[in-house]
Length: 112
Length: 113
Image 1 (tube, one colour):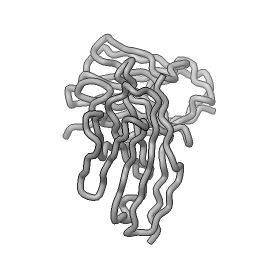
Image 2 (tube, rainbow over the protein chains, first blue to last red):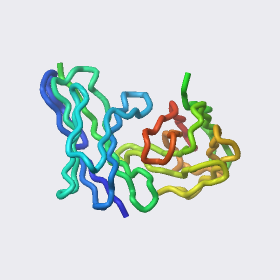
Image 3 (cartoon, helix red, strand yellow):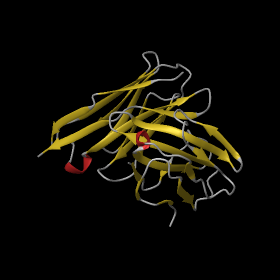
């Protein structure tokens, strides 16, 4: 079945620098890859997603890239700000039942 | 306001005492799902429902039951809770399938003593 690995588990960056979180998936038939942000004590919320027919998608300071050959996708956050501090989850669609398989999460810490 | 609500938000109970966590959405979504969140394990799906009277097991269904009698409600039932079910639980809904944008409830923190 589908498996999603997410790295790193914790990422600490200086405010203003860029942050990159990477996920790998196992099933080449997966075709939907969302990223969710969970602030402390809050619910997860979708911040960006990508489907397998595109290689990159941007929304202001965040972008997601997808490499189908290598079966990995990454979240890029540029010009990080204190409000970017949160746990970020990646997920990949499970082709057998159209459910999401989630990564374990990355705690992003923005240092002032 | 479009939203997913859960109740209770916090619950401390004892082993074996049946409990129900309610979930309701007002967005007319077909799909609803329950997850548990544990440190280092991310979000693990317990059960999901594609429509009224249609439910399926997720990755960790043991010890849980669900029902979907109405489109808006998707309660999670623990018939005989055990300490290993201590966790943070999230309900979510989406317009179509699990691969659409999921809207999460505020979470229910459950402690089983």
